[in-house]
Amino acid sequence: QKEVEQNSGPLSVPEGAIASLNCTYSDRVSQSFFWYRQYSGKSPELIMSIYSNGDKEDGRFTAQLNKASQYVSLLIRDSQPSDSATYLCAVKYGGSQGNLIFGKGTKLSVKP
Amino acid sequence: DTEVTQTPKHLVMGMTNKKSLKCEQHMGHRAMYWYKQKAKKPPELMFVYSYEKLSINESVPSRFSPECPNSSLLNLHLHALQPEDSALYLCASSHPGGNEQFFGPGTRLTVL
Image (cartoon, rainbow over all chains, first blue to last red; front, side):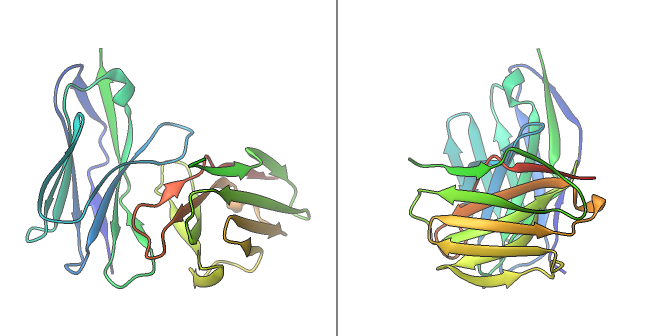
């Protein structure tokens, strides 16, 4: 069974700190990995995608992928209270027709 | 216009009603999705349309009936729903193959 695991949190960090969100997945043939941010009562918003091993940076966000360890992470630098949300890790498994498997999400709280 | 829109934002219906949810995208995508999200849970895939043809039905009960009239529109017809079907219904679109799915704002459905 294909699974995506995340620590549900809540993860609490002070404003200005680095928030580190982690995700592991079960299927080695997975090729595509995504991080979505979801504010309470709103829909998921795509913030990062990563397809190859290593780091990918976009502004204050860095996604890291290690396929050998089946591990993907999201770092948020200079965390702001507006970053407080649930972060969903999603994995597209190889050969699927777009079937994303979502983790249960990590709730992040950034304290002023 | 690069967004996914959904109507209505909120819907309350009785168990004997028939209603429809609508989704529209103008991103040039040829794959569209319906997801269901219960409170504090990740989105669960219901249906996938690729090039206007149903390609995935995740064993969804027949009281949910999807329709894709053209490449920009996706409907979800609802009939004889149960209170446990109350949830946030999310539409998403992507290029075929499913990388980088973009979600609409969702329809909050309450079944009485």
